[in-house]
Length: 446
Image: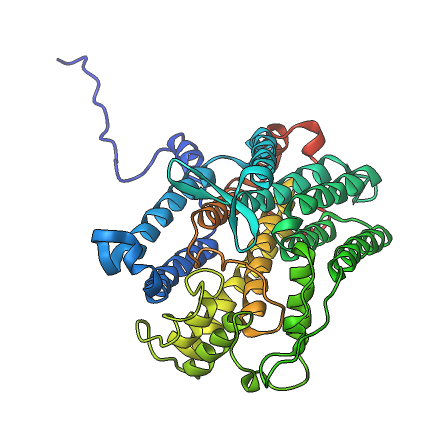
């Protein structure tokens, strides 16, 4: 008993010096709260407005009645949320092989649709798989943005902080190839791809002279499409105080559709409210009425007057219902959310150490935001009619899944990329986790 050593009591309230580093190392990485908040806000708006805009679909869902469209939409949002949660936990350094797999899958689906797809609004746009309608065009836009980020990162010139000619040419060829696959479904998708790629080239450090060349090539391609669109015209038929006479001027094929829409958008100088509503212009006319009815504060969700007669109120024209329900204030809020997403993604991209992470986050952001701006411009009458869903708000399984994947990629970058001011160990770990040809420094890093 006399030889027993007395052990001093241990103060459990203080962590030991050896335990502190382990605890710090075990701290989980956190995704960007701003992007999370925008995603949640868009989902909430989507649930309210989809329910308000789906009166035309009530009878389609059988026993579910008025809640049918909402139940289906909730299921799709839940699926998208699950995919986003999974992707944001995967380090962006592991995206290379999945990107190529998605490209192959998207091109394959698009080729299938071109020959065997279901005809919607005069073009083959989708196919059904296990009772689910899939639109490959949405996946093609996503895969284009991802593969351009990969190509430009692999061809990054570390000496000039620019991009080698090979990378610029390959990126432009991807846009031309994918744009060619999308062209039968509408010129808007091709223009969208061009805008996305140009934005990514600017962030990737492509020199201005190369950007000008690419812009000229894109303009030439767009001009060729529109030139073919003029096609053969029949003599314009007279209209009795209705839409402009160009409505009766018909051209052949899909190009003729673009031409007629552009000419109808140009109009004849009269204000839109003086036109009679015809089969050709009823979508935009009812959309204008919905926005006028909303005023500044809106009629409140569920009280929409135009949702019952506006075609595609739940998808291509849902922004008109948003404004009718919530007024100018609600419409501005939705616009601000998308612009906020672009601003936040730009902030993250400017702080990324590696060009690959910067291109990934900015590519996903511009894909979502540009599509939203296209949708709003079409609905408000600033651009000719064309089918573009409002990301994460419009009805549509493919659009929701693709948008959720894009959010997941942005969150993965915000969570796993070493940002400006990161510890030296984190920067080194990120470098070692990337292949040698993807380690280029971000030229826009602040």
